[in-house]
Every structure is written in structure tokens, then in C-alpha cells.
Image 1 (cartoon, helix red, strand yellow):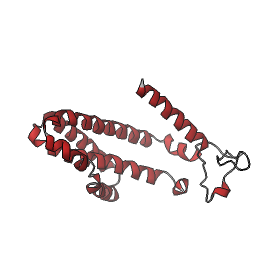
Image 2: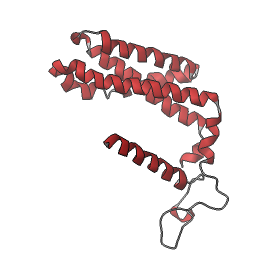
Image 3: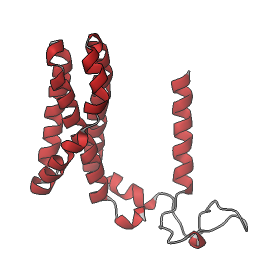
Image 4: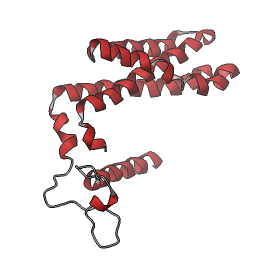
Length: 179
């Protein structure tokens, strides 16, 4: 029941954000259209079209392939993280060091960025698939003594997933939409 309510709340929040977020960036709070004098919630102007900037890139098959690859690999990473706790529960050292080691994606993210700069998005997406399989295989097949490698694979997988996500957004959406 909790997750159903949370999903409904998230959907409502997404709809409110879609309706209220301006298509044109405000340079100051004085630029915002007001519902009433003294109110701080911006209202849509008469010529504004909801989500005009964000819907344009959704017309390409490349965007949907990216969403599919991101969704599958991020889900595998989250599944693997939960599985890691059940597999590594017998090792106190792995559980103690896991929060530090599992959040060290900043070590690998620059390498993913350099790869995208060198060859574009194709090779990093293939590499993302390889690291997803490596991570799932490490969770499933490695003995407990070797699960430190699982944390390394998790870091590389998360570095790929989230670096590619941010780079995709930066390359496909105009910068003025984030100002």
C-alpha cells in the first residue's frame, strides 16, 4: 500500500511540475506571471505551451532507446545493490565498507565522460551493457571472498548509467531551458 500511494503521489507531483514549470527561464522573480498580486506561484502566459521544450526530443527513436537502456541498467544496478546485501550479509567488513565503496562512482565517471568525448555515445552504451552483465554475473557467481569486485563493478555500472544520463540531457536539451 505504501508503494502504491508513493507512486500516485509521484505521478501527481510530476503532473503539477509539468503544468507549473515555465518553458522560458525567468531571469528574476519579477519576470514571473502572477495569479494575483502578492502570490508567488507562476501562472502560464497566454502564448505558453506546456512542456514545449521537453517534448521535442521525445520524437526520436534514439531518445526512446536511451530511456530503455537507462531504465534496464539502472534497474539492474538497484536490483544488484539489494541482492548484494543478502549475499554479503555474512561478511561484516563488506557491509561496513559498502556505503563508502558503493558511492565512489566519481572515480570512474570522468573515464565515461572521456569515452563519450572520444567516440560519442555508441561505445559507452555498449560498455554500459557489458558492465551490467558483469555486475549481475558478479552478484550471482562470485564467492563471498570476491564480492569486493562486485562493488567495483557496481561503481563502474553506476558511473556509466548516471554519467550517460547527465550527458544525454546536456546534449539534447537547450541550455536556456535550465536557467
